[in-house]
Image (cartoon, rainbow, N blue to C red; front, side, top):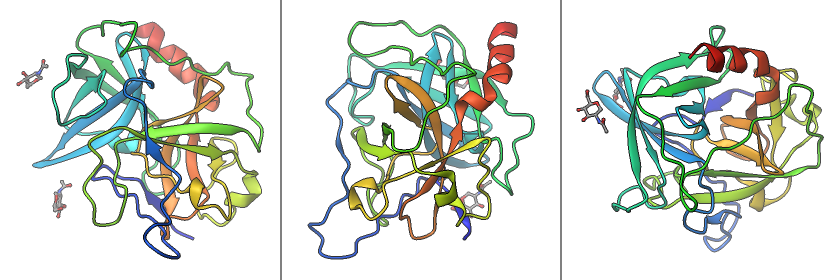
Amino acid sequence: MKCLLLLLLLTFLLAHDTGADDIIGGKESRPHSRPYMAFLEIKLCNNRSSCGGFLIRRDFVMTAAHCAGDSITVKLGAHNINKREETWQIINVTKQFPHPEYNAERLLNDIMLLKLEKKAKLTTSAVKTLPLPKRSNSVLPGKECLAAGWGRTGPNLPGSDTLQEVELRLMNPSDCKVFDCFDQKSQLCVGTPNSRKSVFFGDSGGPLVCSGVAQGIVSYVNLNAKPPSGFTRIAHYSSWINQILKAN
Ligand SMILES: *[C@@H]1O[C@H](CO)[C@@H](O)[C@H](O)[C@H]1NC(C)=O
Ligand SMILES: *[C@@H]1O[C@H](CO)[C@@H](O)[C@H](O)[C@H]1NC(C)=O
């Protein structure tokens, strides 16, 4: 099965098997309850698109490599991205660090670090960093995690103004064998089979948070948008991440 990037112009397609009332299990986040979330506005040639991301240090945001563009602006402290909130901090990205071995065709190493022009101001209510996993840290199948984003909630709907979130479960790597591109070492297989609840509609680049730690980055789904989906496994990249953070 082909892998479909949860691309920029944000395409999360819902799989509705039955009536329209059978909604996906996602819901609107309580405002500012996910203070690490970043909304990324990306310019590429003449196009604008968006991704999710998350603050990992006052001056660094992590996202997916396929969110790279000519320029990126980050919005922190947002719940509704289209209605000015006092908590917003809008900061330009000065340097993009896509993984040097990012492979857009095979969807490998879909991870990127963004250096911010100035340090974000951490606040008690709306802007905080999200911890990364230790190198040795491995999360096991069955674990309940949370993903959030401003992505589309339906095929023909615009992106969501407000942050949405959904609980997702780690699956066995063998459940992702259906994908041409799945790589067990560097990716997580995520979703809850046979459950509409598991349909994920967050943006590319957003985090998968398990017990308060960022373990994954939203990367791709399959064409019918049913579980599972593929997330970049952050722990696999610990030494590359540390190297960039130290040098910058
Ligand atoms: C910009 O968007 C148009 C229409 O969606 C698309 O055809 C074109 O390839 C895009 N250009 C780039 C550089 O992504
Ligand atoms: C970001 O950069 C653009 C282009 O250089 C500039 O117009 C804009 O004012 C900057 N925004 C912020 C928040 O610094």
